[in-house]
Every structure is written in structure tokens, then in C-alpha cells.
Image (cartoon, rainbow, N blue to C red; front, side, top):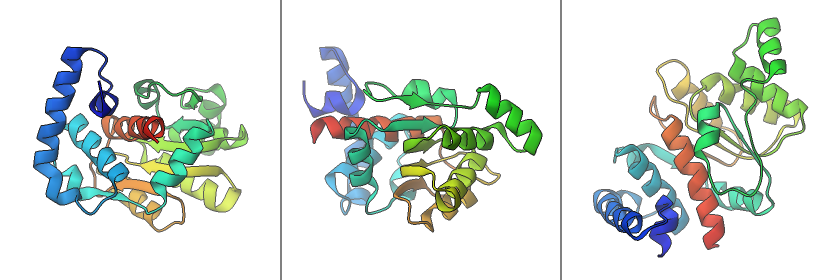
Length: 213
């Protein structure tokens, strides 16, 4: 089977054939839009488009110049991956390091009540207190992204890179714009679009790229 099986996680001939055909379709739809990206960046955008069936992601995905390299270094070193919600966590597969999510952690729930902040933001704080070091993947909660940025810039949180793709009409676009103004290696989707499928696609693409590297 080949790179297409890695691209979409196919493990059977039928799955490989579907993945290969899907990738052909995706490439035909967005080839011109991603031609200036590196091969690794192209694979990430292709997988996002495949996962969402939405070619517009080829227009709205922004990747900082150091995102892929820094992320793959972290994956090779088996650094942790931190997600904002459990749905993103369970979608990430075939990673030999740890994937963590503190949204349901009792300390995050307690902190959220005490500080009157969202559990997603509190979860980022708990992760930092637990000594997190790795890649942050946020697909749903703008408050988690704002908090992660704050923790990295002001509290020394060790985020090797951030995939910031929260979805929604309240705070999502603003949080992603804020991320692009930092020095943190990042990938974002402009505007309100994003979500779990996008976050999972990015994470699994990076894991697949490390295996190809």
C-alpha cells in the first residue's frame, strides 16, 4: 500500500483504493491553491479537505513557516499532545507518545468554578501545572486557545507548536488571529470554520509525516 494508506489510515485493499481515489479528487479540486506550499504542508491541507469535504479549507488554512518542522521534532521526541476536548483526543491515532486532555479533570472543573472561566481554559492551566511539554491541538474552544497563548507567552508553558482551529462565531476567529501574531509555530483556519475533524486531521497528518520522514 503506499503513501495514500498513510494519508487516510487505510489498512485494506478496499480502504486503500478509496483513499487513493479520494486523494485524487481532493488534489484535483485544490492543486492550484496549494501549489506554493511545501509537500508536507500540502499533505496537511489535503487531509483537512478530505476530512471535511470542504475545498474552502485550502483557501483559509494558514501555516507558519516553522510549524511542520517543530511539530515533527516534537513527535519524533514523543512529546505529549494536548487536546482541548476528549473528542479530539480519541480521534488521534497511531501515536507512540501520550495524548492528554484535562477537560474532565476534577482540578480543571474546580478551577473553572473558582475562577469563573471555562473548563477548556482551566484545562490548559492544569496541563501547564502538570508540566506539559509538546503540541497543543485545539479544535473547539477559543477560550482554550486564548489561555494557551497566555500561558506560553507569560507563564513559560512549553508548547512546541499549536494547531489552533476552534470553530464558532464567538471568539474563534479572534483567538486564531491572536495566535498568528505570536512567535509560536502554528496552523490556523481563518474565520469561524474549524472543529474536531480539522484538528484531528492536522494531528494525524503530522504523525503520518513523521513516519514518512
